[in-house]
Length: 422
Ligand code: LLP
Image (cartoon, rainbow, N blue to C red; front, side, top):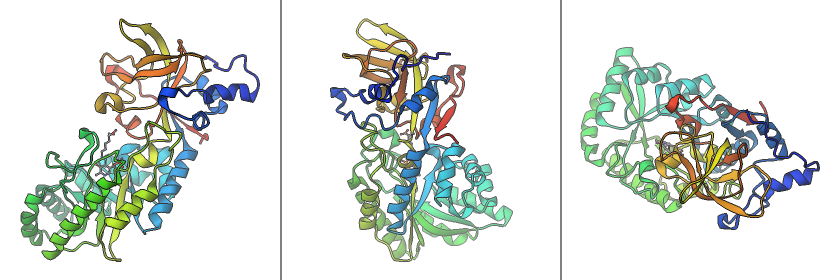
């Protein structure tokens, strides 16, 4: 494995610190002061001794993010359930549990992971459009707080399974509000095209059915319109539609003690150092302003990306550089197997070279080793001249990175490292 010390020959602190500061290019519009926030010489010394690729998690940033979210939510008495789907590493879950957050799970195994890491059962919500019988039974046996039910048929299945084991399931009705989220179509969930939530056309059937379901206790109304949403108008529109739906149910004598508005708050992929912590204040204030409720009604959120995205980076080494017919390629040892977001959603992730600056920036396509043309991290990225062994950080990879990794091409799972060390 490479032991390419990028600081060789540099002895003073400033001479080794500056190179990382200097990784800013006009076409990326960043300030040099902030570029260094994630990586110090201490990090790089450690990275240089490690096999790549690996995920690096900044636990102090995670802690600050958790605290910021908790502080802003508590101003309104809101409850946060962390969405394990974004990152379910035990080391990441630990400080989230310690902050008193609940958990939002979408599989039986996520429910078990949440319990195992210390989330209280009475703070676990279980969503998902296709919960299996086994998963439902697991959650019933563990007495979780709430099932977010996504169809009339699912409600009937939960009734049957709860009856079998003599339990009552507490549920929230996940409704499809038919609200556009203005995000990537693959992470939009609340429109007529989407499979998620109970469609308004089924509300009447639902009401007729409910009295017969003696093992179901409806406590909540739930919705979620999508992910990586940065414009608060989308959340405002969700609240307005949600208010309407809630009123309709109440007029039909179905009342809720709990309102769950889902997750979806976006993060700044372009400028992770300028905005390492999302604007939780604006987000919660928006919901507080537009979500109608009584003082008794509890309001829940399911935040994933906004809690963990910025604390993680995928660290990879350049294997080869190659001048193609039209493009200069940096071929790195991480691929879509570690971070599939660029291939799947054409997602932008900032790529930062962890090496001394060069006067001239070169333009690279940063690509992985997988046998797929969609296996790239960035196109036309301005970077210092790269050579075999150079380290790159692919930023904002803490959410939906490691959890979505695969062993396609029989690749090994990339390990995770944490700093400060655990
Ligand atoms: N609640 C429900 C019901 C959800 O479906 C999701 C995400 C969340 C909460 C958490 O949303 P967040 O706060 O993380 O935006 N793999 C995609 C994201 C998929 C999101 C799926 N649902 C990506 O990499 O962008």
